Length: 580
Length: 40
Image (cartoon, rainbow over all chains, first blue to last red; front, side):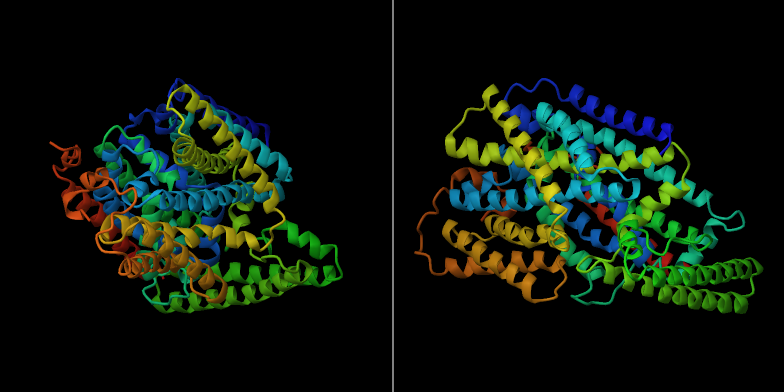
């Protein structure tokens, strides 16, 4: 990195921290600290929701996903607008009317304390583990590609986030999110423009898209139904809908963002802003990855973008074999480059026969170079047993470091840091809020004055430290990291099922919902261990299992027995059409 | 007027706003379909 890169990176991070501290000053009550003063406008809510959802790995992994697999990943988000509309109609008015600070409070009003605590604790478990991975994953990529210490990286991100999150609470988090989104948008747009600009002069944008499409990188929509296939339109709509419904409706890291709205209208508009931006945003990030793929049709890429495992091979007995494969790979890519040039030339000539023939030759050359690459990856796997041989997360940043100009490299790395910080701040703020409201305030009976601000700060600080400690530990988890990454889907279905039962199934009372949730969660974990069902479907399975079991258990409840804790407040707060 | 009945600042009703959100999703999917068809 050049001095200019360091200047841009340092300036951007300093700006985020100071902006968050400045805008978040002045919280004097627990409600002000946790609720952000409940005066946020729709655009601030929308940016904060997007920023919390957008982690650094979004920018590192998503372009790499398009490079390796094409753009079908965008289908993952198709359920989001539907979920946002459902929540806008149902959950947001309910949360506002009951004036809750966390999503789990309403479960006590509807069921009982133990169901509220179960949901809150499930959230604390899955979110506290996930936030560690949120900062570990980009720290790992930056340490491998830039040689930075992974421990220093985790410490830097964690410390910067905690400065403004612990001091300013929800308001500081939201305003810091707005500045982080600015850095992220600016960095990614400039990276996209520069990538298009760095293509050979005779390759137009249209040519680039035809090359990417010809090699299967623009396969956005897949209508084939397959429950084992992670990304198709059905898993996106159905599994994605349940996941997003749970994430935005019951995950405190998101609920806290729109509960800070000054009114139902502002909260709704913020959530809908996210619903309208997310799909096009993911499309553009994936398109950036497809353009990087095209760039490497005209330039030779490394055989494997992650240099760490390659070093292991080069230090072992297969070093000579790997070098030979690298030589074959360069030759294969040279042939592929010639075919790509021929295809573009044929396209400019306009002869349909020549275009079809050269496209076929390009596809064959690509298949040949992939065959050589797989031989190299096999050696990498052999030298690094038990590790994931994927280099998807390294492709984009390796490209940025080797191709983009000074200044822009610093800006893209600032965007990566911003992504890491934005999700961590939203998450530890929510963990702190849940600890204070659902545990400290409810079980110990603390007041909502200035003392609660300090309890909130201590809880947020403690969760931040836990996240950093788990991020350090994550380096030793190996392939378990993937399991942690899908942790959300292991718990979201159950939590969503509890909420849907609360909203829609009138006859179910506290005990039935609680035990149904325990059995359903056990069922989801069994599915995870013994089946190959794609993780998005766990959200559907967990949710339907809770609703079905809770209804079944309720048939054995004594008729007319009042539900412990089921107050009138919940019934009054429900919209008429949803009243249980 | 209850809080949930407040009109959105644009389009006059929430139903219309929700229709726009859904419409944008449908438009995106159609564009993606065309995009896939044209370039693949």
